[in-house]
Image (cartoon, rainbow, N blue to C red):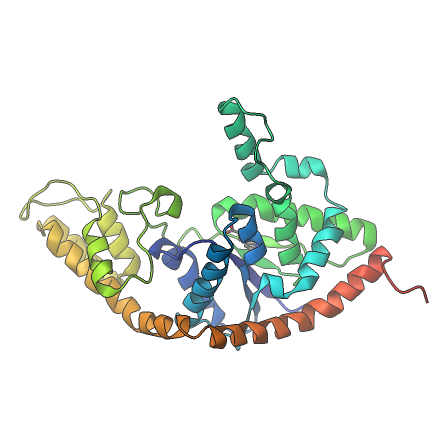
Length: 335
Ligand code: TRP
């Protein structure tokens, strides 16, 4: 049996926000300190190319996301932290998998289907502006996962279908060429908070309602002051249900703090006061890491070194494994 492996990827587009922090980064970093599993975290920069054709954004975002994970205390001794594009075996595996993947399976991918539907709704050709990158995206993701024979893959709900596809692809490869791949499973944690944004909808870059993770203190405060509330005055009791401010506060609070805020709402705390407390809580949690982040981001050489060390460790796994896989499909020396 191969060592129990947990793996997850982070697409390098955009700047991390509080929703990413609460929903994905923080739980992953906590998990990275655990023993007994091999955990792999990687910057999915090839995935970024599917959505983004601005080289500066892809490049900058890789730096920011790497600095974020390191500043927040990712344990890179216990886990393997690397950049996808530093592992050429992943691209190589992508082709081996592409050759066993049914086109019909890819036709059913939600993200692809949604893009087609959007075209049709607008009266465009079904294929308008759809690249093969978008279409084949689940195969690249399967290669990310199968390359390390990951057992568990923590992801958001929107990625569950991609995991099913990875299993399907692994099964087909195993069927044709022997048992090489573990069948991976998605792990969706329903307990992690889905953070609302400034306007109450899910915090997301695409809704323009996100609070960036590394705002300087003053700007963070300003941004929190913009969380939408209602027109109740100080002294009037307030509901915690449906309050984005309460939800955001809660995501950072311990049980006692949450209880106290709940009581303050019932007692009619003013929105300004509640927001100030929310700012202090979040700022308290992030201030130290923010200083580390700022130091790191101004020292890309150091980050690059950490990524190279990660790649080296990753390739101790991928280089022999791709040799085995090439051999299995008949790509090998003549004699
Ligand atoms: N597609 C994932 C996302 O958008 C990111 C990702 C790429 C990933 N490769 C992966 C996640 C492999 C888990 C495993 O969130």
